[in-house]
Amino acid sequence: MGVEVSRLSNGLTVATETLPSIETVALGVWVKSGARNEFENEHGIAHLLEHMAFKGTSSRSAFDIASEIENVGGEINAATSVETTSFYARVLSDDIPLAVDLLSDILQDSSFDEEELEREQNVILQEIGAAHDTPDDVVFDRFSETAYHNQTIGRSILGTPDTVRSFTPAQLRSFMERQYGADDMVVVAAGDVSHDAFVREVENKLGSFRAKSQNAVPPQARYIGGDFREDRDLMDAQIILGFEGRAYHVRDFYASQVLSMILGGGMSSRLFQEVREKRGLCYSVYAFHWGFSDTGIFGVHAATGQGDLRELMPVIVDELKRSADRIDQSELDRARAQYRAGLIMSGESASSRASQIARQLLLFGRPIAKDELMERLSALTVDRLTDLSSRMFSTRPTVTGVGPVGSLASYDAIHDSLVGPAPARKLAV
Image (cartoon, rainbow, N blue to C red):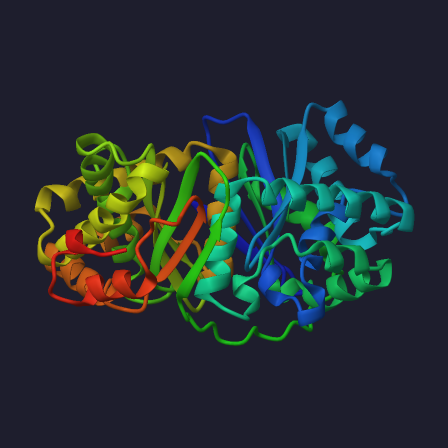
């Protein structure tokens, strides 16, 4: 049947996809508001709000929310990202009304009790501490902060201990009222669901939700790049080399996704084969590309011992430069096959499919059919990918390292090796 979409009178978008072989339903509310939408004095409030959503309403305690969904064998949770926040559940189809009622209750009537807030602030402080003690978490946080210096898009989603402690119930209510409006929200269900029945449930519970958010469009992101190193007494070094990527809407977005798969998207990828299999220079290496509404970032992450760090970065740089000269058709075909398989496999998960539909609706205003995505991938050519590589990897890089990084080449040496004619493997420390 494909994806069916309706819009309520208040502007709320409701979408469903019936998956005949699945007996459960994944459903949720996705809001076009995340950590990037915070004011300067609100660092971490979007994430705290997500935590507080399950801590009670005027008619349900925190225990009531947890027990009601678990009494029917269901699950309920939430997540905060840079640009969105989601509240979602998974239940048997007969329990859709309960799930919709719970989600609508926490979105419209959360109590933000002071004692619950104090406890949850303490939980997040522990989460921040755990992240600080995890080097691969730290290196990604510092990577984003360096790539987008002094911008909300680059800040840690968790916030800081000082900001998290400072928030009050009134601030949480103000943030929610300002950010959450039907015009910037979608409700999606995938699995064993009837579209018309689901729309009626949502209309009954969220049809009177405020129509408009007061959320201002965040400032245009500016990729800056730069260098960050934190020398820690650890067994291994975590490093990331990154570049400005492509936003969701631009022509080279899918090319950037495919390029990341060719370079570091699996055991047959260039970086894995050259760095790990042939040379044994690290135990983990992969490439990634993150797209946002107005920017993107491409990166290579590696984890290695101190003794191999001096040789590792030159090999990575050399492989990036080689991709601007040659990409085999077989590599492009393999990456396309991986992408296609990923789409099909995600379509077999109700939760993955619901989040995919929600993301497309928030970004593009419509669901994008699998065939349309495959057409875009089919249009990619080797020449287009090598051209993208030559442009992307000659721009200002972002270099981030955490651990015993004293032997990592200097920022200037890395930058010069990327844009200059000298072989990357002669890169000096």
